[in-house]
Length: 313
Image 1 (cartoon, one colour):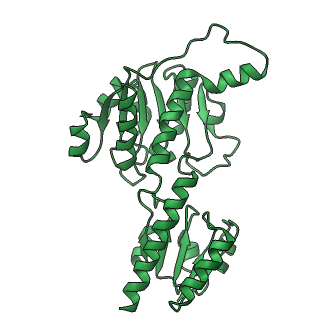
Image 2 (cartoon, helix red, strand yellow; image 1 turned 90 degrees about the vertical axis):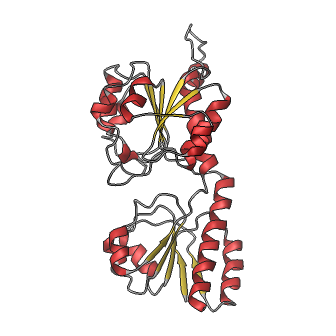
Image 3 (cartoon, rainbow, N blue to C red; image 1 turned 180 degrees about the horizontal axis):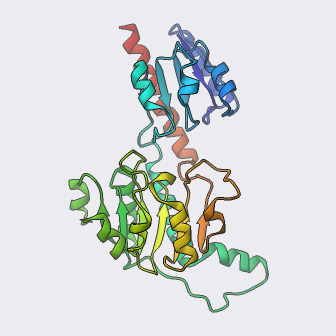
């Protein structure tokens, strides 16, 4: 069985050699490529002859997958799967396994950190200090006592809510399914419209699906308080980013902190968020910590071992 990791995914060259020896004893050939290439021609070349492909968030569309006739299992080192052509995989019978939960703490921490940055104006104050300025009588705001609306109470949304509870925030939430664990924490479930109307901070934690694409529309954004801030660490397509930029530029929303976009960074120069007022923009880093990558490797190797064992029965 040929196994190909089309990118290193945090696996060092020494660890790759160690893993290659481990899987050789199981009758498998493991190849870990030391760099990340996203062009289709390179991906197809790397995936040739592989029964198993390991990948993180590199897009794998039909154009690539249909040129890999031996592929039977995608071991995805990522939580979301919207970068994979799942319909084609289903047609072909290609199994997909993700690394659900590996970055729960990392993403939740960054979401809260972005809220603090926006409220306490850390980024502009850093710039002011470096240009030899003072506070200039600018005041920040405190998280304590604020109403935070969590959109999506999966593992990350719930963990974010738990962290915010420590700050003294009141948590309301919208989710397609209500979790008893959230209710026990004192989270108040309500409609999406109510979340948008009542929240001082709206934090998005829903996966990108056909149902959630454009969920936070211009109509939904129009319901927000002028003092509200929007934080998105989920998926760019969940929100209408052009409408968000318009709201920011027109002062209908106070600020936005964004880590995810319609396309993966580097962004194109015409992205409307780049010129929108009062934005904190990050290049999709919420998942990227040393701790989360260690967990991720453990998960994808466990998924791989389970697949190999199922084939050898």
